[in-house]
Length: 418
Image (tube, rainbow, N blue to C red; front, top):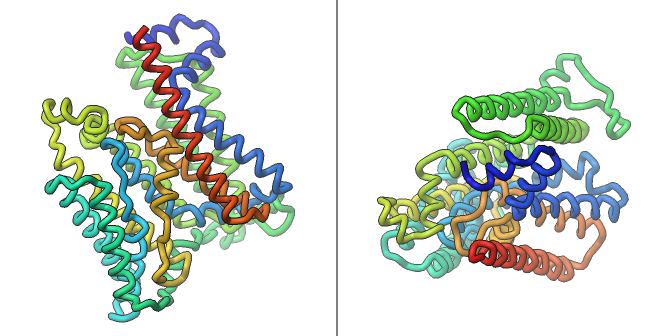
């Protein structure tokens, strides 16, 4: 039994247990509390506009491509604070390739999307080769990639903006049809006071929340069967009930707008898959090991080259997927697509708790960081903030997040030394 577990076991009060858990996970909980605080501030400042169902729906679409790339960027940073500066250019390159395949060559939209994703993967493989096998620092290799893929984008488009087929728009901005509503089952929209609720969305979210509760319960039961010391059952009930209510409230808000977006389904799937890879697989543990101590990881048998190669190849694939989504939202391939996206993605990961030194951070943390950036952008736009003021505020938020990371680590080092 480790010291932290013993400390929780000795605490008889649920509040004491929660206090200990919070103290041991200060960084993660602080990020979540910051997100909640920002939501409350802008909800009040915008007179309730921020959390209107239609604005929540738009927030998902507006930030989907940043959140998709934040998943891959988190893995890059975990390997030792490495970053990928080329992701914005890969977004542009893949959207240009989409125009080439579907418009110029006349291929079907579905095949064009698949080929676009393949081009993103190949771009990531190119980066991974130079970083993993030639040992070029990631900053230099991806800086070169940023110039390379931006140039290829402009060569393909020749400076033109080319409209894309409707399938791209559906993927990026469409919603799952209301099959149940179409069958005649409709619920009055008591959220906005007009229209009807998207019944299929309510059912999907309800089923998903019940499955989550089931898996959490089975996980607790499995840990108990294997002799793990568990926290208070009351605290566990509070946790799952809170998650159930939050998820279903979110689903209700989507149902009051345009329903469940396809891109949200894609994003949730990616979060689940990559969280599983990062925490439950050998490949994920190797990523954390390389970032924690590369020399020790190599001595333990971890193939450093292989880890670095697949992480950057994966980043290219996710940037390609983000390029498909962004092109769909823009309804066209543009020479200016993806401009400065790398800055928002990197900021999202560091705000979300990824360590500059690597080895620390989570996929969920990167998503929360991306949401903080997205809500800041949306809230300040609603309030009519000058774009330069918005940039100043986002810079200060990033600086504050990294400063907190440095401070919390220094406190931990001090306690360890004592």
